[in-house]
Image 1 (cartoon, rainbow, N blue to C red):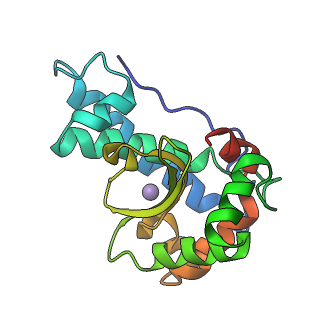
Image 2: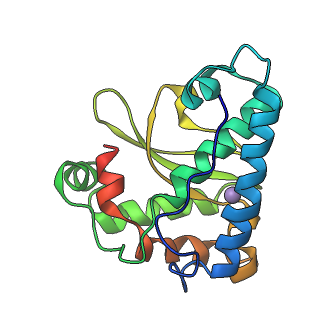
Image 3: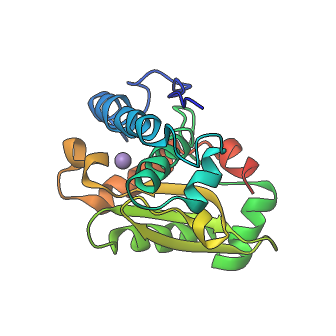
Length: 191
Ligand code: MN
């Protein structure tokens, strides 16, 4: 199977000022493209060649895992955004967030604090288990909650390449800005 990079559902300048055109062009256009190119190169002739990408992530190790997971993580991340995003989640996900975290504001604080607390490169995640219970977790480097049996719902990328052009060392500001572009319709559909 050859994996292709899906075209973003918005122009690359559409997320500014939360994420600049320059960052989207580098991050999705170059970093993410490289992960997909490496995935396609590494998977050829391997036992994983005909697996769905999620299954590759669950079972592969080393460079193939790293590139498969990074390929998946970035598509998941960039497809969570919309220039018309922001606001609060409604429906069952909104109810579950308020029930578990006390309020949407408290959830946002806890999620950003977890992302700020990652040492080095990684991702902060909201995931659910099979009973619909929510978890905020972090992974380093290419990690993905799929390998822990969880279903990802939302993620913020905290690798410096995700924010350094726009925010330099201000990771907290970079993460907080993302709330204004979250497409909750997409995110709710994952719950
Ligand atoms: Mn990234």
